[in-house]
Image 1 (cartoon, helix red, strand yellow):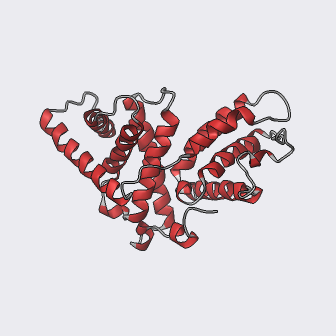
Image 2 (tube, rainbow, N blue to C red):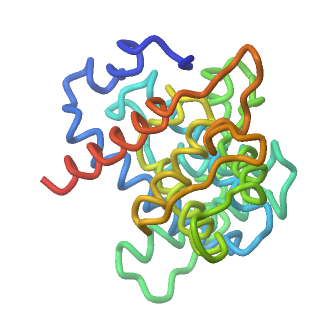
Length: 254
């Protein structure tokens, strides 16, 4: 099962507007790095709930950007709005819009190599309006449906159940968590089921660490943790996600 028709997922509004897949990948990467820098300035990264929030904000952004060409909106403003919206939706930490606007301005000033940025009230007011306007547009594009299940929720369920061929699985789980976030530098979240994305992060970590994942106590393969009689995960689905992400990285390096 997939979340979109393949062709609809493959061709975004930006592609239809003439932006190549490689250039779009570069934009995804830039936006992912911007999100990381923004969150460092917001000092959200050490919160227990950070990964769920971070993934949800990026999922909002990918959904919006898939429908609107990157030529038609300010990426940093809209990504800031998406992160603000995710924090507000999940009611996590201090989600005041002024806090997000100030972080946005700090990131911009650092890119301009301003070592001692000063932001007056008029500037903050100007960008607050832009972020709130962007939030409104994102909400409309999402159909006001914020009930997006992110892979992190499934990853929490996976962690205590993963067994490896020797030793404990803590290092593998730590790497899988980082990879799970890194998956959001692509549009994987628009097409693949969140539980399969979480499983793919574990699979990729096991491959990189050359560890063998053990079957479940009931004898089923490790990747069928979430299966029932109507839904059976195929290993090919996990490999497909891994291959797509690797292809994205290779394109970025080329």
